[in-house]
Image 1 (tube, rainbow, N blue to C red):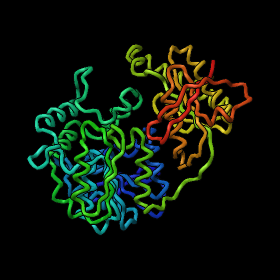
Image 2 (cartoon, rainbow, N blue to C red):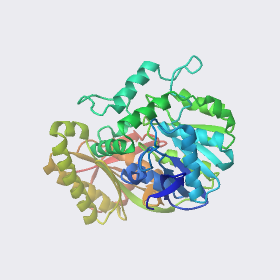
Image 3 (tube, helix red, strand yellow):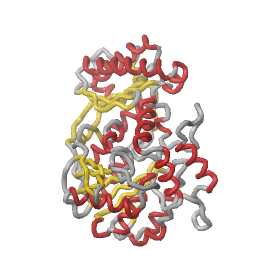
Image 4 (cartoon, rainbow, N blue to C red):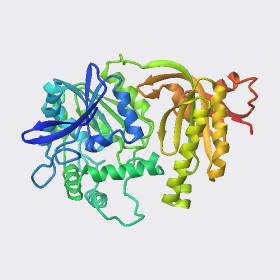
Amino acid sequence: MQTRFAKVGGAHVAYRTWGEGPIDLLYFEEIPVDMLDDEPRLAAALNRLSSIGRVISFNPRGLGLSDQLGRAGAPTLDERLEDAIAVLDALGCERAALLGCSFISHDAIVFAARAPHRTRAVVLCNARARWMWADDYPFGFPLDLVETATTRIVDPDPPEGERPLFDPAPSVADDLAFGRWWERAGHRRASPGMAAAVLRDRTLLDLRPLLPQIDAPTLVIQRSEIDMLPLDHGRYLAEHIPAARLVELPGNDLIWWVGDFHPMAEEIESFLTEGQTRRGRRMLATVLFVDVVSSTEQAARLGDLRWRELLATYHDLVLREIDRHSGRRISTAGDGFLATFEMPTDAVRCAVGISSAVGGLDISIRAGVHIGEVEIVGEDLAGIGVHIAARVMSAAGPGQVFASRTVVDLVTGSGIHFEERGEHELKGVPGRWALYAVKA
């Protein structure tokens, strides 16, 4: 859907929607709403959530595509709440479930506490009740650390090569395409002055008094290995919101849609539909994952310009091989590809073809192939079959194509030969799995 605008007084609040259905899910965001589909991971996350209802996102006044405030300073909590309600009114939505994540979770907390009659349920992902340390909140940030981090974040001309104090998405630290999108989104989200005002206001928030006022069913999800967000934050929320349930998941990305998003999506879908998730169509598919080995080192060695040129050639090559072997590209993230095939022999030969072709580019790929039941959710795939294929790929080394035992058994007689590579534990997948490498 195209960007639309709700009216608040004489001002305009930009919003967009995805999907339709019995549940309205209000996703609080400050990134310009017309950029949310430009990042493949975020687009996939929104498309997946739209399989159970209508996802709604908007930019508060002063941020993104919405009108400016007409005054100095950041939008207040009251103004943010007024904007959210105006968007729901424009869409004819009486009650919505709320999705508040990481940096923007405070908007969902305020909405749920102050507008309970408009709140159906609340989902808080990697959230916190306050940022700052206090005697009765010892897992918050020290003041000097917050001030240093804020100054660096909003510096319009940071020293070249300076690393941020905190990385909200370490799993994509070497993804240049993501880095460019993130920087562009930040610049379009707010001017340096507005960004500084928003961050300073946010760091001083203490929403703990509002937590007992939230009476809607609440799901608190937190990844367990986030450097800048100890688990105590999520546990505090769950303990002080009366109808809250806490789910802790593995992962070190603060940004909710980066990393392995599918377990989080399954929790959200099950919670919002009370266990009756409207599932997508299921099918048996051969799943292929491919990515570049040591891409960070390659980018550093070649430089940004040469690396971008190389990635463009690599993308064209991979897509050509997928088409040549009758595959279907599902998603692309940086230097990684996910594709499905009707026949396992086609998937394996496609992987071998990609590995051989990239030799001329002076890069190495690794690939993983698995056959399993998958779920089609919009344009994306979900389910344990997808997770296993990704883990099979992760076990492979440079230039290797790994396959699960299921693939090996089904391609018998095809002329493709494999070498045993022992049993492996696949992260997040029960049991031990026998893996095989395709012989050159």
